[in-house]
Length: 545
Image (cartoon, rainbow, N blue to C red; front, side, top):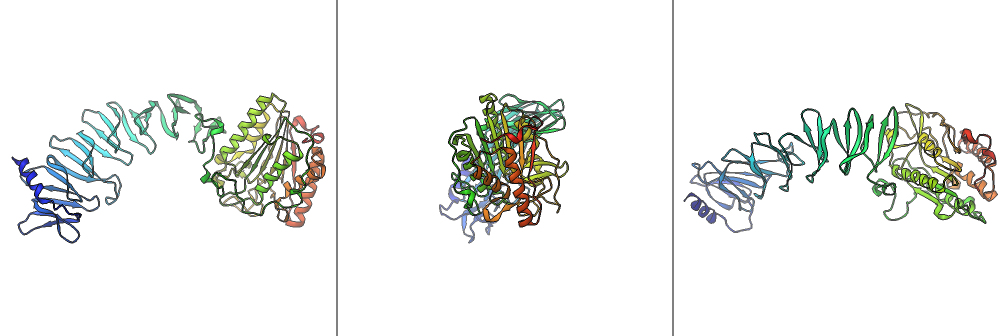
């Protein structure tokens, strides 16, 4: 009889209008209804108790105080939860500010169990739990018997256990057994790491950092894809992670991706037009070395060039670095006779792009089984690690204040090249490693003086030709729209048609750069040649073609 009376009352109180509830109002008889902003009835005053939450746009009501249950109503005046089943409906959110949504209805049944509904009355978590706790990532629910569950706000039970505790992390559900054994579930409800590790943390989509016997590794696809043998590891950034073992810091590719898939998000590049070429803010190449480029008669089928031209750093661009890389590419193709598909250029290269370049060099060296030669050219920022005075190339997405993690170690580059089965490798670095920019002001923070980095000796069959000594600045030649080092390098290749030995080439570049830097900048810039021990007696007679 009570239910029939309730339905009859509800049928008579709604006005069928477009007005929305703004608050509650009591009439002269002490009955309460819901009114709009103009205090017109949206729901007639038939309740003995009612309240309205203006943040969640949901109200609760009691038809008769002799009935211990409550119902709920939405802003249109529609009953979303009938009175008769719940003795409490609390409007809750997971935000620390009570006026910030989204909002939910925490339901308490007459049988003493809790559940959860959305603000339209749709059940999210069924009322079978003794405790529920709503978090931003989902709902933790627990029964007195120890059964625990994780529910999504879409009403899906993601995980369930009577032996594990669940911790809702930003990227995944962490499971815990006892005090210090961990595993993981995804927010799709799949167990992704068994609960048997000392630590579990997110590393990248589909891959997790795990710790076992005090060492770290990576877990994915049901197994340890990288074994737990490292002293420390970090999450992947642009599909590259920093790992440390026995004091040596190394970089690791995402094992779930091929090197060719390790690409950069275009949004990280300051001036990259998506789907188009990298744009330069500086004048285009139009000097004497950019015209009348000599053309070789033959092709060098076993020589490969890798060119990195990093100009558009977000806060400290390198003037004319794109000009340098692009014109050096033309000299490789036209003057040195390299086939076009043997010349690889990476403009505004990220850390991932540098990894790609090194991986491609490895593949070429293996394919040519010791018969290939490599020319590596870099124009961009170099930086020192101030604590160790070691040198790093700065990717376009690198962080000056965290160079050891986000930079590419020069020692690592030399080591990577030295172990390849190559006939020879020649490295040109139009960068300085003192922390200064081409314009002479300092790139690094917290100091005003240049740092002299430790000289790193190349190994294998390698010659390194750098634009400046350790604590000097590598300048640009403003009227030529090139770096000074690159300009004179191109100038000698142009004058000789590329038919020049490395001794003559480096002598010319060194002499011209030293002279012009003193005249133009009133500062010394001294290009430096560093041959490996294996070539110390022979490098001067070697040629690029």
